[in-house]
Amino acid sequence: QVQLVESGGGLVQPGGSLKLSCVASGSFSRINAMEWYRQAPGKQRELVAAISSGGNTHYADSVKDRFTISGDNAKNTGYLQMNSLKPEDTAVYYCKVKVTSWNSNQFDSWGQGTQVTVNS
Image 1 (cartoon, rainbow, N blue to C red):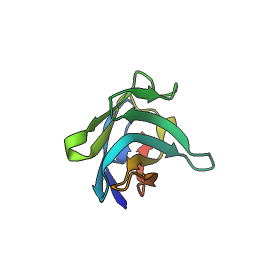
Image 2 (cartoon, rainbow, N blue to C red):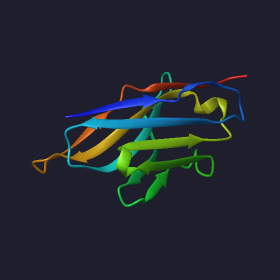
Image 3 (cartoon, rainbow, N blue to C red):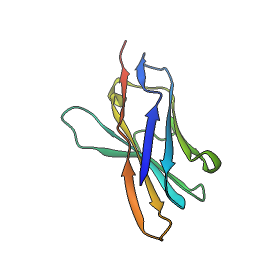
């Protein structure tokens, strides 16, 4: 079982920055990947960025060159640095991890979400 705690959301003006954190705890062997999703009111949840345990990254076109995903394997923590924020980035941001359990099962676990509001 994995527990995820997200933090770092808040209210920021357009052009500003925020850094989200996602800390994983519980009983698991390893984190294989971490993903950040977001869901705006009335819209479907969308993948924003992903990072593998090997450091390979993927970004949605809408956030390329503005957002940076990173991870600290030793701390079981992932980050999403968000720069040049726009009003359309307003959403609840969710962290998801893909983990391998001690008995070699693989499963996903979601965080509770953190609100990001970009508004002047």
